[in-house]
Length: 442
Image 1 (spheres, rainbow, N blue to C red):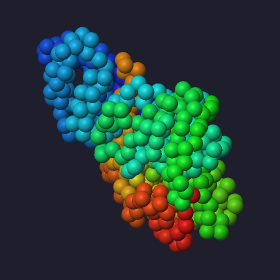
Image 2 (cartoon, rainbow, N blue to C red):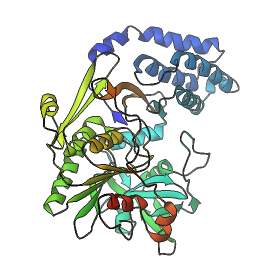
Image 3 (cartoon, helix red, strand yellow):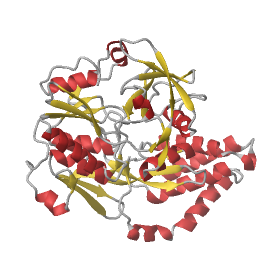
Image 4 (spheres, helix red, strand yellow):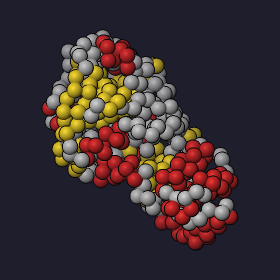
């Protein structure tokens, strides 16, 4: 997600006079449906109020009409429980409403998902194994392994496939917008298990080896992962940097430091892996992308706007970035960016500006929320709602594309990965840069 636009006091004053009326409107709407006050109705009222007052995205649907429609659905769903109707019921109906609204950047997180976000955004230290997992066909893919973590020390590798956790089969790939079925075990459930600090049995599948089960215990580690080189090959000429998220306020600085270090070591071709990067702080991705050239991202709010700029891999002064030569860049050699359906929001913005700077996009189409940014608000259940509050423009009145498509299509083939150790995305990126494909996944 593209997060946290600068405070906009004028807009806050504009909305302040509307708030009492908005609360009354939602309450009256629910009362008109016959719904009793309950945790579900409280959650619904709070979330819809945030969207109604703040939304400024690309959806063309009438939110008030949908709000009334789904208020009636909530009333029917809550009729048997009355005033005890749960937050879960309210959240389920909210999810349907927002899906119907048609802006994937506006959504709700349950309390557990909100807790995971806050841990990463605030840089908390929590019990972790060091694994970051992603849903793929057949299980949970190890998207990254934190260096020196318990999982790393046990020999768990990036792109290993986890098929079972504590003897339970794990959930695989979900269709876009599909909710996980009851009893499903996915990345969130794994994070919850990590936080207990108890031993976890991981069953791994890796090419050329028998399926193995390892016991790992989470230890106190930072909740957020850092950019780091995960493979250097072709005689030291080419390197892959895994860039897991842009949530950390020093992501761009750390990424720039890694790039400089690789340049000093003789690397001349760069691959940035964003396949499992869900976004983060917009200023960080803009700054990081400016290693490929000056970047100016224009955010248009309902009232006014703001520009984010990057230069030389750092946050740049607006006028310096606007008037800088397009050839001014940190990385001057060939480059590729690996993208996929889990590449979202701010990561899509990075990919867009990297492509403008000459990098090849390799992999699969991205999630499709590159052209907007969100505001986060707490909800009564302990969860969060993300609401789109600005539209993204590259220059003038030309909006960013919603979705990035690869210059070189190369879907990640889980079958080849688990049987032959071949990362088809990496192979395609190496080929695009004129290098021989890696024999095995890094």
